[in-house]
Image (cartoon, rainbow, N blue to C red; front, side, top):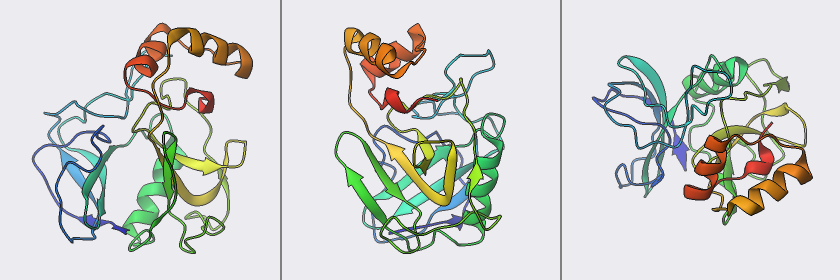
Length: 208
């Protein structure tokens, strides 16, 4: 189960590769907190140049992050990218602060792909945004679906059902596989993105 709560901490990072390594116990809370930017072993990205992967950018001092506390496992800390996904971040933090995600489960867990949550019905059919309906979150060329990335679930477009999100687990790929995949799906994968997908894994076909 996952919850959000208000806490403070001295240092944070993006979604961790070892996602449940931040602590264990029966606490079922999650939060929004301020980071010191002293850790960078993250699974989210931040860039300033167009097309540069930002997923692994560490939080800056005072920057707000999201924290999911998973019962019996520990914390998942998520760096937010409002400049890249304004509506998605606004919705995610708004729902969290309203307690919408408290005590929900990850209702869909697929090995080497992703874990999905945020559905109050717990079966993949429920959920709404802070605006009460679907919204189009758009895409960013600076964020990719590397392992640990967090994104809103959709059914083949950039419009989401409103509250369901997933955390990428993914798998590692050989460069030749990535080239073939890029051709098949019509993707443009930078050398940086390819390096990340070969070293850290992810779900590159979801990019864009």
